[in-house]
Amino acid sequence: MKFIKPSEISSKIMTLFEESDKFVFIVSPYVKISGWYKLLKKFENLASRRIPLDFIIRDDKTNQRSFDELNRLGFRYTAIPDLHAKLYLNEKYAIISSMNLLLSSEINSLETAYATETEKEYNEIIDFCKRYLNISFNKRIENQRTKNQTPENEGTNWLDYVIETLNKNLRDRIKVKTKSSHLDIQTSKNNYSAFIWNNNRNHRLRISGILSQKEYDFLKNNKNRFPEVDNCTIELIKGKGREYNTIWGTVNTPLKSYELPSLITYDEGAVVNGIIEFISEIDGFKKWTTENL
Image (cartoon, rainbow, N blue to C red; front, side, top):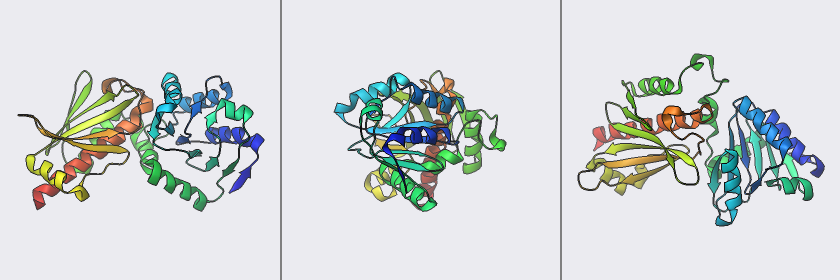
C-alpha cells in the first residue's frame, strides 16, 4: 500500500477517475458534491467515454440528503445498511480512505488514504466488495455494453444481443414481444416479463417468470436450491386464485431509464446482464426439476 498525503487525497481520487477505462465504483456512506465543479467535470468525462459510474452509500433514514443528491444529479447507486467503509476503485487499482465524498471533507477535514500497489492488495479489496457489497466486477467487465466492448458485439442493439446470447446459452429459439413499457420473453420452458420498476427512490430492472406448483413448493421448502443471480434479489410470489405462481428478480443497480423500450445506453450493461442471467438461471432450474422431481 502507498500512503497518500492528506493534501493529495482528492487529486489522487480524481486521477483514479481519469485513468478508468471500464468502470468506477465509489463506496462512500455520505455524498454531497453539488458545487464541487472539478469533480463533476470528471464525472462528465466518464459519461462522455461511457464508463459506468456506480455509488455505494449508506442505507439510513438520516441519509436522505445523499439519496436526494444522487437522484437529482442522475447517478446510479446502491444503499447498504451500516456502511462505514470508504473506497474508490476502477479496474486497475483502489484507494482506501477515511474521506466521504463530501465537498466539505475535501475543504475542511484532515483525512488519510492509501492506494493499492500490488495485484494481491487490489484483489483483497475486490474480494471485500464482492463479499460484503455484492458487487460483481467480472460481469461488468465481460458484458459491458459500451463503445469499448469487444469487436464481435460492436454496433449490436442491446436487445438483439440479449436474444442472441440466450439462444446460444439455452440452445433455444427466444421470442420477444416489445410492449409499451415492458418486454415479454418466451423460451421453450417458460414465459418472462421484464420492465423498469420505480420504487419512489430509484428505478430498477424487474423480471418475472412462471413457476408450476411443484416448482414453487420445492423452492419454498429447499432454500439450499434457491436460484442465485449476481447483483439480483430473488423472491417467490404465490399466485392468488387462478394466477400463476411466479419467481421475481430485482437487479440491485439503479437505472436512469424509465422504460425498457427507450433504454438509454448508460443502463444497457445492468439490464443486459440482469435479463440474461435471470432467464438462464430460471430456465436451468426448470430443466433440473424436469429431470429430477
